[in-house]
Image (cartoon, rainbow, N blue to C red; front, side, top):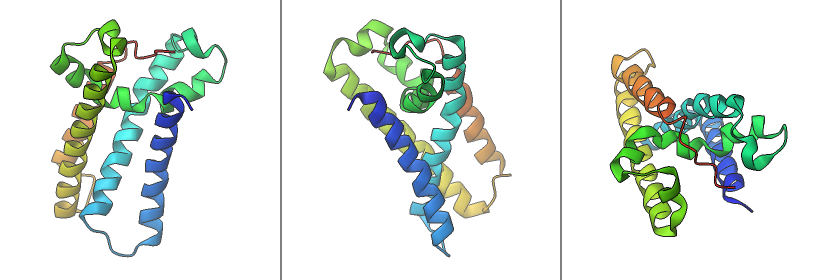
Length: 158
C-alpha cells in the first residue's frame, strides 16, 4: 500500500469517526470535539487538494482521471500543514523527500499542529457550543488560508 492510499484511508477514517461519534453518542466530551476538530481539518484541507487536482499537476504521477478524485483526499495531511510547517523547516520540494528523517520530522510537526488546532477547537466548542463563535471561525480561516498558501508546493512524490 502506497503512502497516498494510507493518507486517504486515514482521512476517511477520521471523517467516519466524526459521523459515528455524533450519531451514536448522546453526550459529548472533550475527546469527541477533539475528533471533530481533526475531521474539520480534513475537510478544510480539501479545497487546496481540489485546486491542485484541477490545475492538473496531480497527473504527473497518477496518470488517470481518478487523480481528480484521489488527489484531494490523499494529500489532506500535506495540505493541512500548509505553509507554516514548510517555513518552519525551511523546506523546498526536493529537500522534503530526500531523506526519511526530514519526512518523519515533517509528519511529526503535522501531527503537533493538527493536535493544537483540534485541541483549541474542542476547548472553545465545549465552552460556547456553536460554530458561530469568532474564535472558532478565526481558527477555520487561519487554517484555510495556511492550507491554500501551500497549493503550489509539489508534495506529489510518485
